[in-house]
Image (tube, rainbow, N blue to C red):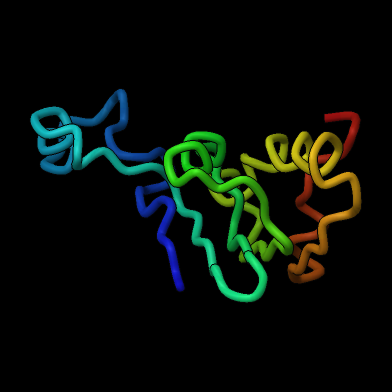
Length: 115
């Protein structure tokens, strides 16, 4: 099963500075509010594709209590901003390394402990 956890633009919908049609729709109907991109592949293992900055909200909304693997498509903030939430999950709940897959270029864009 594929679960689209977020399908919004890099800044989400609604954006605080935007007055476009998508903004107006989301203002009028809260069901049109969209968080940033993440996808869950739910099968024998739970694979998260991208960790959006909205990850905690997405996981709580969908009642997701854990994942088995992570795949990062690229190094933009809207696809990696939820890594902090995953760090807490790995340290406090999973208690073992989370296998993660990405290109070498994406790996160079990961935040470091000093950031």
